[in-house]
Length: 309
Image 1 (cartoon, rainbow, N blue to C red):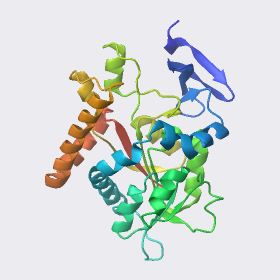
Image 2: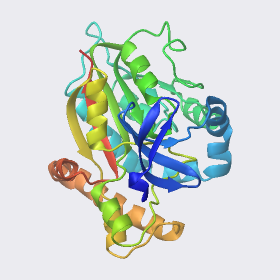
Image 3: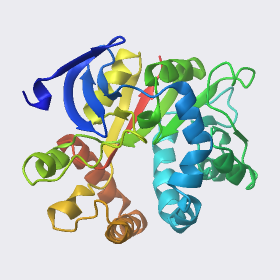
Image 4: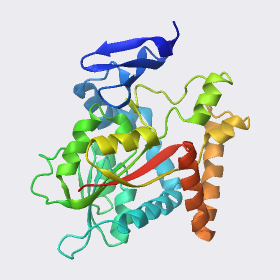
């Protein structure tokens, strides 16, 4: 029996096994409506990991690299705010308000503040929260919940950039986030576009292992299609979808960055240069590419914008 023929049923989760890495199965879970690992980590294990271990042990050079990438991140983030501003309501004709869940180093919040938004972040890592607060950006050092955000009012938009893949219970988080949105408010999500067609060619036809499956870091494995179904199932109208540069192009061209940080940084630098040039000189072209990649199901991350009724 191959993996795709094996079924797992445990604690309310049920579905075929798509891959097994480091003793964890990735199942296409029917009750949840998306792919996730089995078994899941406990809340205590996740809190320990993201409160300190992630930046201290797993990514000790994260902030140095983030600063080096800041120009590129800010171009992407201003593009995201353009999408938000095309649809976001305003609260009593005042400045728009955004809550960023899992705000990391705070660059997304910084971009919003520079555009005139009132911004607030929730970030579980003490190190990342201090890095953000040190630049005068409002951030709460905690895991987000509606209860912890009580008294802060409703928001015109809530963002989750590269967060959904890390959550034990993304369903509960999205429902709590919706409760903090004003009527007509927007939920903006970016997340890895996993099990996409280019990855599947490399895995199934060219001998690569499923390198994107990293159970210690990613619990959930969405793609653009499952994200849209997820939004619909939880009462959000999808307004826009796109994907980012398909990094798997490098692997298909023989640039094997898997497990090779030096090659990975070279490929990342080339991807950045490509996007920075187009954002600076032909923004319409990169938007068209992002839409085309999304339509084909390829691209390393998907972006989805949904609206609360």
